[in-house]
Image 1: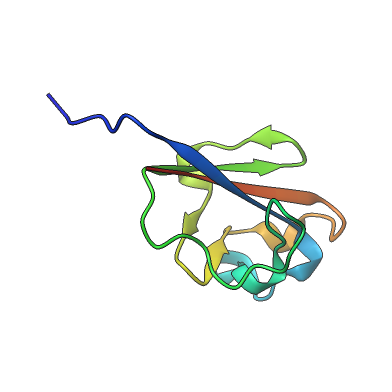
Image 2 (image 1 turned 90 degrees about the vertical axis):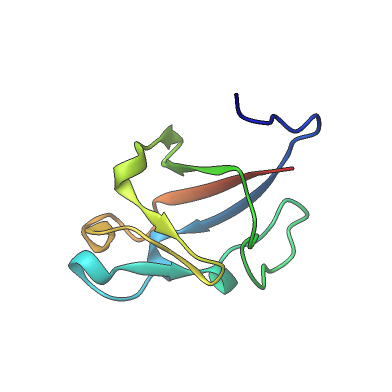
Length: 94
């Protein structure tokens, strides 16, 4: 049985697709293009987290839609979306 931590919280970051770079499979949005829950510019995404949720235009996406590192979120094909489309990345941390 997995160990479940008694405390969990989340960190949310918001941006738009217009902040992304690259095309096709290499489309990514840098962590520094996001703002955090306080409205401050983000410097990096959490290095350790339980899982993350990606919301595009308010709709949660499936796990195969993206990947994240501490420096960026990669969304293959994201360059095809309108630059004004909002994106939220939520990291659940312990």
